[in-house]
Image 1 (spheres, rainbow over the protein chains, first blue to last red):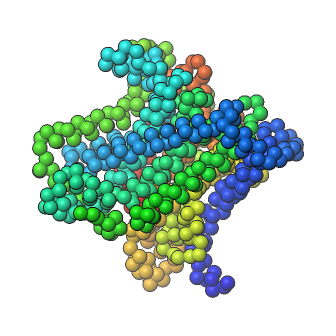
Image 2: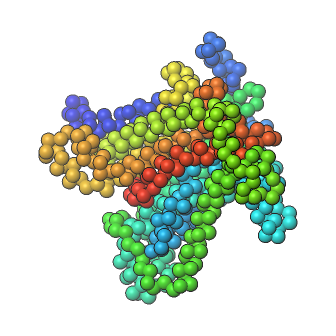
Image 3: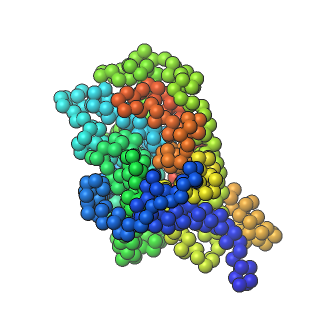
Amino acid sequence: MRRFLDRHWYAYAMVLPVVVVIAVLVLFPLAQGVFFTFTDINEGNIANPILDRPATYVSVGLDNYLNVLSGDASYGAFWSTLVRTLIWTFGCVFFHYTIGLGLALLLNREVRGRAVYRVLLILPWAVPAFISAFAWKYMFNAQYGIINQFLRFLGLDDPPVWLGQSDWALVAVIIVNVWLGVPFMMVALLGGLQSIPGDLYEAAEVDGATPWQRFRNVTLPGLRSVSSTVVLLGIIWTFNMFAIIYLITGPNPNTRILVTYAFERFFSGASRDFAVASTYGVLILSVLLVFAGVYRRALRKQGEVW
Amino acid sequence: MTVEAASLKAVPQARVRPRSRRSPLAGAGLHGALVVASLIAVFPVFWVLVTSFKPDAKAVETTPKLVNDSSLDNYGRILAGEKGDFLAWFGNSVLIALMTTVLAVFLSATTGYAASRFRFPGKRSLMLSFLVVQMFPFAVLIVPLYNILLALGLQGTSLGLVLVYCTTAVPFCTYMLKGYFDTIPNDIDEAGRVDGLTPFGVFWRLVLPLARPGLAVTAFYAFLTAWGEVAFASAFLSAADESKTLAVGLQVFVQQNRTEWGHLAAASILVAIPAIVVFYLVQRFLVTGLSSGAVKG
């Protein structure tokens, strides 16, 4: 034991603070949250030290899970919300990646004013998300928003009511989130592009490869490790993205995803249903864990080291 | 021809394709695409800036004009506290964001360094757990966290919120910094050790100064995490006006049927300025810092 500590104590001392913070503020709450899913806990029966009131919630077994997984509308219509969450996630990440890659490829060329373009293109990342949300909400307004003014100017007489009770609201929040997320992808992929040695392109050119062939056979494989990481992170972040939807459309059922519904359940309503909110949380985590496991296995099959 | 991804990582040489071979048409297309993308990226910010000078009534006219009775009135009213205690919110946000930045950079630097240089039992599971932490939806944590902060006496305080933000920022930052430290040659550590420095000394005096780009990106990320966070701030801070952060306070402008767009826009600009300043300071490090960090983690 002594030798063990002698050898590793530097390392442990350096990681200890993080481990403590994460254990206290993530692992312990997670365990408690999982426990809550088997109870009927809400605002009225949780222990309240300020009022000096003991907890009076009781165990309800698997009822919360059964209620949620039944897809009942009064429990947030789980399955259709899950489908909407998947559309939201994959829609956003697809455009993040393709637009981010396109811009990274353009910026990786020698262009006059490259530094200026780069600063301008990263700007959406620097603006706090809630400010961007307000800005877009303003621009999407059906009557006085600049977007519909522009569409009318283009000759579209009847532009959509973006943030109303229709699927246009989902399209609108996806547009905003794409705008927000592209800079991160662009910067990460730009870094990846710069680490691909130029000789490979020269060799490919000597062999007579067309630009498209060079892209498919040199650029994409060279970016694979970067791409696999940022796509996974992007999917996790987007799946759990809350602020944009909450601030732009509020509790609109047409933009409801799993996370926003859990928050609605937690915050609104007379009872503040902590149990169902926690149940949603556990289900979200399970979906992401399963996805990450499958993703990892798929990458390993391709010989990826990650 | 196929290329092994692994062999590419070993050559971190930036190479830019020469311009000479591009036809004028392709050059115009390239600039055209970049200009359009830049316009889309910048326009919402520009539009908020323009709106911030208009009175509320003119901000909702059906034919928007660039300048319409514009003045600095909105800014004056917000800074004077007529629309809620803006300066108090601002102070809270600055305090919370700076504390988060300092704490997160420090914690993720030590952890990232340990993960980069030492082999110790539990390292793999530590790094894996960081990835899983990214997946935790706050919804499952929000009630238990509330209880724990209450038990620790941190509920409603800035420090409680800072610790919560660190749990989001530190895992990602650690990944990024570990990757960055990996690119700093180990010889430097050994040389320092030979000169009689302790492992902490090597880390503090030799490695940290070399890792400045990585640290800058980490700081940027941690700052933005705290500066723009909404959910925890609305759930955990007390309802008293003077304890709110900007993200919570600004929601008073967005009432159900009556949004004060002019005032909201002016407040938004005031909020965006610190973030853009931080961004401008670190932007030249972003590509190197992020690429050698997160993406190879």
